[in-house]
Amino acid sequence: MDDGYGAGDIGSVADRLRAAKFVAVLTGAGISAESGVPTFRDAQSGLWARFDPRELATPAAFAGHPKRVWDWYAERRALAARVVPNAAHLALVAIERRVPRFALITQNVDGLHARAGSRALIELHGNIARVRCSGCGRPADRWEEAAATGADVLPPRCIHCGAFLRPDVVWFEEPLPQDALAAAEDAARQCDLLLVVGTSAEVYPAAALPRQAQAAGACVVEINPQDTPLRAYADFWLRGRAGEVLPALARAAWP
Ligand code: OAD
Image 1 (spheres, helix red, strand yellow):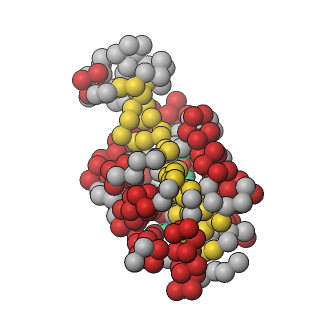
Image 2: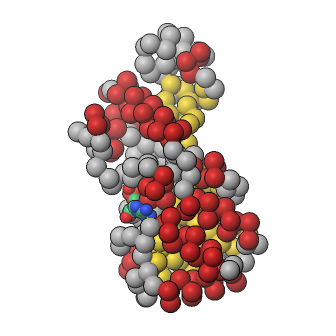
């Protein structure tokens, strides 16, 4: 397998991208890093520095400390609303418009792909901008107004059943939305090129998708400044930041 981001590799991948009938992309937190959104493997900052995301993004954490978990997500929701999509998100929109079939599978909950203009988007882990009831599951449009107990008591409670509201994201130990996972697996099996961008490829079932794609005959390309378990089998590794590599790849494919 070629590794290291060099002109030779990007030319070979650009040729495959231009010839591809169905391009699928799997993204992780790394694609939003250049927008200023910390990745999960980045050290947490500020008052969250003492917590590991795995201590906050779990049903047990919410059951034990609902206000702490609500506040952590409220801070991440506010950050996501403040930042903007970067050149990598925009390059994926340009690629989507060029290829016959396209599917963007993201593990990210920051909503930046949708804001960049990506259309064929599969959000495997939910979306931080959405809130739902932890009891009856109903979506909450406006939780401040919806909170029966007033916004000063957090987490707000569902106006229908009184249970705490929670972010509409997937926590550790929780199942992924079945329809999203099925769509992602279909795309992995049917695509002829899979770009894997900015993920440590450690969290399943998303991390199984590249192998599923390769087993079904797809060319798998990793785009990441660091190596990950994909290094053992990906067909190409374009080593670099997504905000540099993806625009360069799109330019090389369609000068
Ligand atoms: P991670 O934080 O695990 O990995 C981020 C990856 O992005 C790393 O491999 C970095 O090397 C890479 N990276 C950093 N900066 C980059 C850049 N500028 N361009 C390209 N890559 C860059 O984030 P994820 O792999 O997304 O799950 O984590 C997967 C899941 O684990 C998350 O969706 C979340 C977390 O627990 C849930 O919340 C359910």
